[in-house]
Length: 243
Length: 243
Image (cartoon, rainbow over all chains, first blue to last red; front, side, top):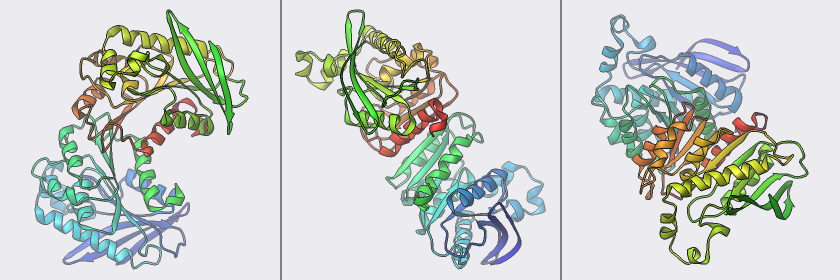
């Protein structure tokens, strides 16, 4: 694990890093409480399709976890996204990029990438082996369901805006192995993921401790209120005293 | 409006009352902050089928509104329920009682009963014309949708566990006139109200500012967490400073 840039602002230290996993280099950003040397709970944040590890709303979310809940947060670029996009990918349409994700090996590799990232982070004194949660919508759920299903260290998750469409049937196979407490988001008028498809995924989740929140509007119109809900939900499980 | 019994416990004054509406006497309970003489926001709480105005979970909810949010709360018995049940009704099956509710005039009368209760309460100095919300699930939504649709004084509502089944089609007719901020609850495995029926009602609601929360389990298994959510939601709208 290599750190490059680091800056601290209002009590939050933000560090760029890279982790090596097999033949791949995974670029990420880590947010931790300033000058912290004891373990903190950690939230893995998976970005959405055509997004990247530094999207504004993810940076805001990560900083709120640190400032309000004393929880660290990490994002990494997904395959073909952010710093992992080749010039060819950067110049193609979003839909073409998203079609690149439709393969078993892509999902398996992203699960490995997250595991390698988590392995590396847990060696830091400010992360250690404290509790771990996952937050990821849309593409962050496409990878998140297989990850949460395969990773026992993840104790709580926020997922949503996704279902078994366009060949992503693996979601339904992996969902029964998602058994941790879960908050699942749905957009009532989602133009990309039909309501019955996100319901199908929620229904297939194996855990009993789950709840679905649905809000009006299209795919990308998750209201700010719901972002606060997801933060409070994860904080309640990862750092009960902070809530 | 006539008050009978009154008692105060941990800062909450609880008073039994009755209000007359045309040929009917409506029995209710009012919870207000102790020794309060300035207006407080008010939540109208509608009980569920086979329940009554003093059900444990409603009393707890009402007391929490007063203690944590400075919001008063009121319940009244629904038709054929609680103190409004004749001996004949008391001795019949729940299903038979519920079938009695299936008539336009029953719904209209309950809407009138709530309006008469609100008229009377607003004459009290401790209620006045402060903001009003509605909270009612199941039968509390069967009557609540027509009430919220018809009553402009209600500014925010919690509804759910109901849909257009068994002839209650009026819900779908009135739902477009429910335009206030709304939190709608659904039980994912509801054995009384099929999921698609509660979705149909939620879909028919006229307001844009609405959200659906769905939890696993049967009709009567709404988790305590969700009760807290409904309380926080109403408090946020009725008494922003208390949240």
